[in-house]
Length: 314
Image (cartoon, rainbow, N blue to C red):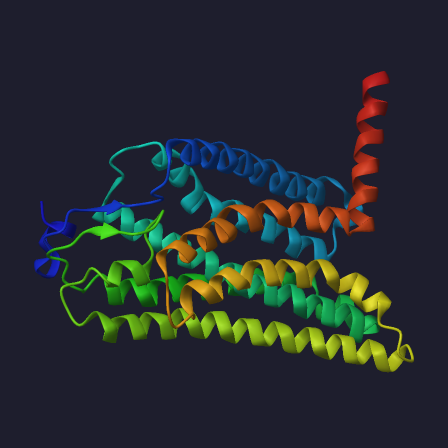
């Protein structure tokens, strides 16, 4: 069966995901590890969303954005991790052309959304630290919703701009993807055309949003730190305390992205482990980072446990 009903002469109907070539013990270990990480991602991030909804003290712009980040993290990991888990112990890891394209679109839509979400969170911290008197005016509920909608729109535009480009390429021969999941750079290498030219276009697109948002984030954090340093006569501890969780999450998310999409000499083995970091480890660590370093969330957990304890005995 030709891919996408014979679209543009494509004759590849499915792709083979090579995944990880290792011993049976390694695959079992990875399966168990990824399963536990995925469980942690779902429970940890849903807990943050639940906490922000039920605790009125967390009904602030910062936690509204954090809840959206947690919700998006569940989506990011769900695009790839369940398939990675189910494929690890399979001998033949096959994905249909349509499923491959859908998976790739979701990866880039949710990944792009996450990048813009991280910028909105940095903007929120800038407003809170540098413009405290105008903070609630700047970050009004309407603005917060607008920022979330903008994040999703930017993510979808990023994904669809690449999808419309890749879907028109002819696929007529090789169909083995040396990865855990489908992704535009890997798919392009299999097209029956001048791959180098198309790889550059995709790398430029993904690279632009990755590097562009990363530098915007770095600039915003530098600006916040400089502002606080000037105001507090050289004491940066308060600002660093507030920003440390955000900076940690940004570094964890962007490092694999830069390796996968911007590194001039991509190697499959490194990319595979970077995929695991981006889709399984970072979304699992985000709730831990925000919970451990956040007094408001710790207090909200205490209030929730007291309420549960009170309800049990009443």
